[in-house]
Image 1 (cartoon, rainbow, N blue to C red):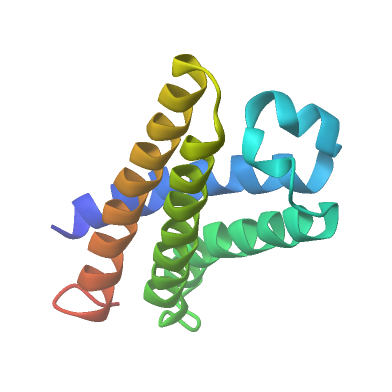
Image 2: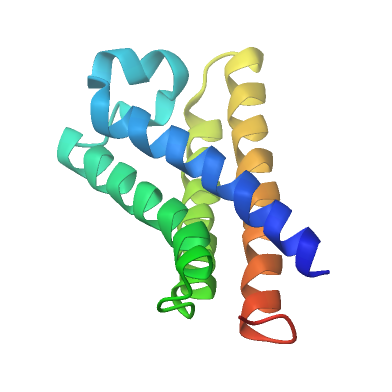
Amino acid sequence: MNLVLWILQIILAAVFAGAGLAKLTQPKDKLREMMRWVDPVPPSQVKALGFVEVLAAVGLVLPPLTGVATVLTPLAAVGLVIVMIGGILVHLRDTKKQDTQEGRRTEVQGAITCAVLLVLAAVVAWGRFGPYSF
């Protein structure tokens, strides 16, 4: 199970490092092509979310690799669970705003992706707080 948790941590770290860096480095117009939800969100909040995602990605892998402050790993996973709850809510809210079937489908797919990432992060939090802590 420890190996499974490590694999999940690496997957989550890669996903959120990539998404977070995109939010930090790309202008809002460029992000809009990939992430429709950024339209009503101020750029500063998009950047803040990107910063949180990058911090969580680092927190998932760096503490156990260094053996320093390993409690940050399950805390990072819990933080991602909270972020994904927000992501699900935003995508479901935006589903109602879409005029086309394709637009609604895209938002539902976004909510499902957030739900899958939420479950993966919850498994890491459970395992690293509980029976497979460092």
